[in-house]
Length: 377
Image (tube, rainbow, N blue to C red; front, side, top):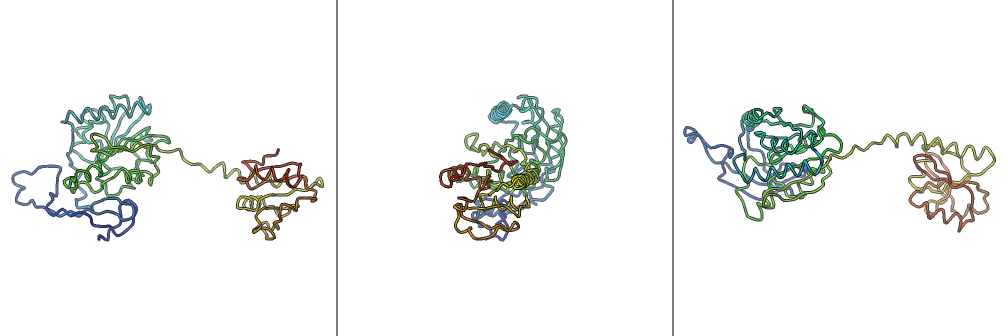
């Protein structure tokens, strides 16, 4: 077992599941004649997380490895056709014509060309000087370096992103994915493509495991990685004769709690005013509901005095509410109590309580329920 933590879920230890004892250190370029004497094989240990199942390699490459990285598929007619169709489908499906799309790890800019041909307004980021210069020479705007959680990319926020054959290389999955998402508009869409672990396993392809690739994504762990970093996964699928796992994602709208913050004051004020006005005119008010919602609203509205508080849960009856210190009675206490209005705080049971008020306890007065404001029948 390896004492390293899982790169995806953080659990440890990792299980050692595959050993390659005569692997090349560098698979992205061939050697010059004078380099042969200094070259040698390395051992690779493939690990799997016992908790989430993520397959991974401990890093064995230097930090500068990708500074002059050169691995492109521009020469392949099959790949060009596949990428052109993929880019066109992505742009068309999500209405990205005229919209900004960034490619993370854009290499020589070939795929940027396909996206541009499909109608997107494109830019990229690429750490390799060699391939970045090729992309720039094709007329694309490309930044140098890596995406991180704290980096703001030129032209951000974007309407869409693509990252292809990149995530298998990165040692910090969460830093990169969080960085991508923080450079997107709310609702932006993305395409993430990685080599398929399912394909490697099905065909027993030990040669799919090498030093460049530290992450081996199945469809399940690809989805997991994206969802852990805030993306909504629209679909995951295998592409190009099952060689690739591809995810289509969306950057969800931010969840805002501002309305709830406003409701603390609004509802609390309405609640207290409703009770105060009724009692000022000699009328009686009861509250039905001593559950979590009822206790919360009574406390936030600073209600310490109502004519009656009832709840159908016999385990609560006879006890007192926290903060407001109101005694909880059985609903039968409503009978003959002269109650003029009932405020229902047990929102999941509103319809049931309404029926019980009229059918079981003969109440036909005013009923109010909780919303953003107090809702009065």
